[in-house]
Image 1 (cartoon, rainbow, N blue to C red):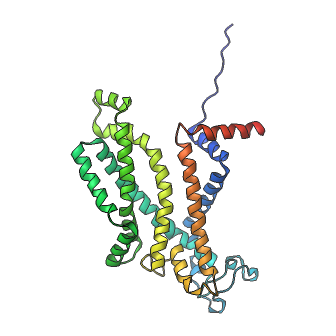
Image 2 (image 1 turned 30 degrees about the vertical axis):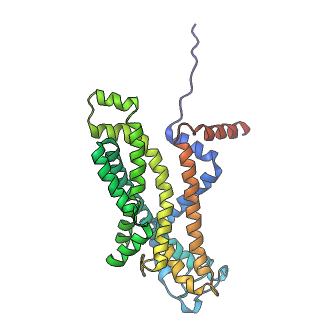
Image 3 (image 1 turned 45 degrees about the vertical axis):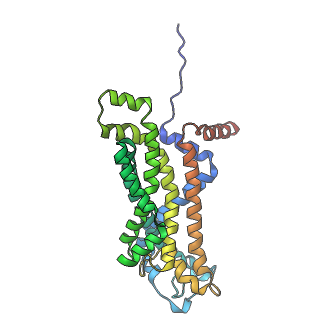
Length: 307
């Protein structure tokens, strides 16, 4: 009688990622916080828009933690008596929308140009890289200030400007990765078998580059969100009656001496979101790298053994 050793099946990719996320508690808390922010950004305007816009001059600059007013006033009220908690929840949508739109737009454009620049001939690559040099020759925030001053502040213009300024980040990274990957054996084998250039680029090279780009996009999301907040603080970002966290800080700066909470709470929301994005990006850098992934897997194994 033959004895067959049963080899346990490998966990599915999503299950494996969930286990590695559970092994890093800081990244787990960051992911849960970002999930809450995302949910609030989706349902916030539908849920609390009327409350966030309703003025109550009797409660202007009301201090935080006055529970008798209700839970929406736990963070206090602004100069027009509107509850800060409701306004922060509603403002999350515009803040996330601008950041996500800019990151997705710049990532797509930069990745496509980087793939072409890295795989195509030297002349084509040099032309594309000169385009990146032109964009990078201008400070991103200064370029955004000039363009928004000319075109006028709006959500669309803000997304376009921030996306353009971030294209070189993805372009240069993708080109460097492609120039290294195209010399590997599996790419050369695909070329010998007669695969077309688009198939090689998008079928064989892009999946290898994608984990690096995802990590950069997570970090870039935090940078774009801070840039949007800075532009709104300067008064050339999104304008009232629309609202973002940066605009809330700008509206509260004149009351810092007697109503610090007007700028503190939206600023804290920006800090916590940015910190969570950085923690999650650090986890993704390890989890998506086959040479570093063992650290999280070993930590998870130790946790299971102790349990």
